[in-house]
Image 1 (tube, one colour):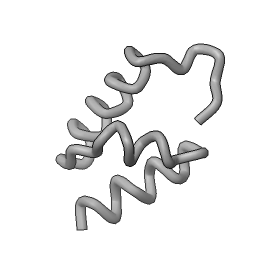
Image 2: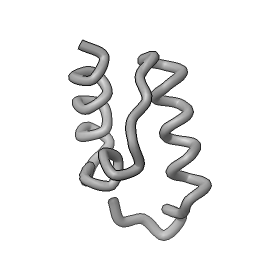
Image 3: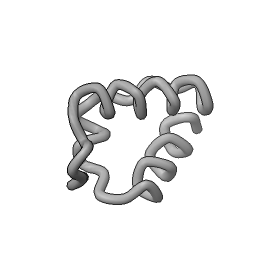
Image 4: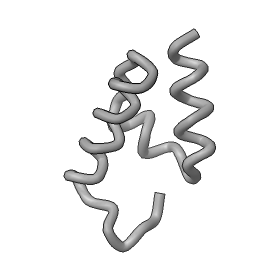
Length: 49
């Protein structure tokens, strides 16, 4: 993802929200491959099964 405010704290925040919302733990590498919020959502849903 490319965003001015995208830093390590933002990554941790997104990982925490995904964990809390979907009950899955994504890796930072998985998240880094996402380019859109929709990509993050699809990854979370697919990981949750």
